[in-house]
Length: 109
Length: 239
Length: 152
Image (tube, rainbow over all chains, first blue to last red; front, side, top):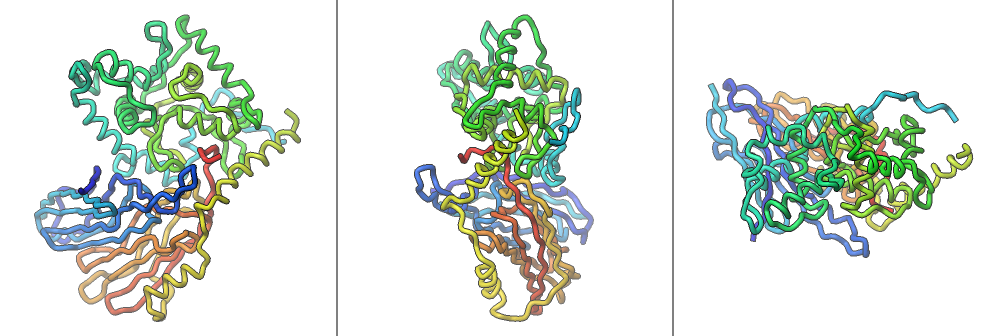
């Protein structure tokens, strides 16, 4: 049983070939660190997003491993070269079967 | 003790006390985590609900138009009852939709509050004294000035008399409710003004007002009146 | 209220704020844990200073969400690029914060994220280049607590 949540991608929809574009990716996720306790003293188990990948026309161009030290509703901003027109796919994978996917089209001239 | 900064007559949002990074987080919707709740609110607004199987959008056809300014007017007297924005949303749920009330701090209630508050972003808080709300406003003012808790402190002692001074390293804000609901970094989630007020009360070791209580509404009313004219920053970010 | 009583109140509130740190939920990593994490990354190889800039606000209002930016000076060409960036926080219960994997298609080695910092501390960014060399940069910050929290 997989769980998912909302994600948000901010990046230009068009760019000149070879230009460096900035991509901002956020996922809605509590990123439960595994270091917190309930009021009655019980440890709340870790439940975080573990990896984030960005694929550009099916080629992985960026990846990040997240640990509990990443803040809730994790944001990552990175760059990539606008090589061709096409589709960028963003995937977040995490504990307890978490999976979220988002896409963005880019027109490269 | 040094005299507190003379902010008499000058209302200052606690936005001014934040770091540049946190200000940016509030100002940029692509950085502000509260926008996830707004997105959820948009879905809920369209969802048919309750025994009457009706969505918010069916009564309030144009969200932007119908809700414009709404959040700047609450709490207000409606049919003889002092109603907060959350209270009115629940009143719509129960009365118009035949649906159960949403719990305070639930994802659903926060999402709808965030969605509605966003429609008034930048607009001045428009809660004024009137013959209708006069009594409740007076009660709210009494709460604001009443010493509470084991520390025996009133809201006014920190947020009026000592606004601008420091408490344990943090500057004391005037304590205006002009950005709610807020993504509070301390909570790591979105929350309501009432949740924040309960935090204040736990700060002075006082019995916290219950969510949705008349006391809460009165205090909210006074705080919004006190902040009248300030632009609504909702949904805000605060430390 | 007299000045003396006011000061007494301030002290009590200060204790309240501090009290939240002595719960079992926070075990501060010593610098040794951070060193161990860095050892695992480099397998004991030499780390050179420079090329890596880590930017965090010098004073943080709440450690739950701190904007952190890493910037590595590199042409990012097929022959000379940053392969991985590791961020290690000395004062966190788990020093490893994140690892970013870049390619010559990345354009820059600039990453921004938002991290949790458990306490005032030094944070490290270790970058590995495609030629296997390691470079590091760091930044120090003071983390303060929010006033009036839920934790009593």
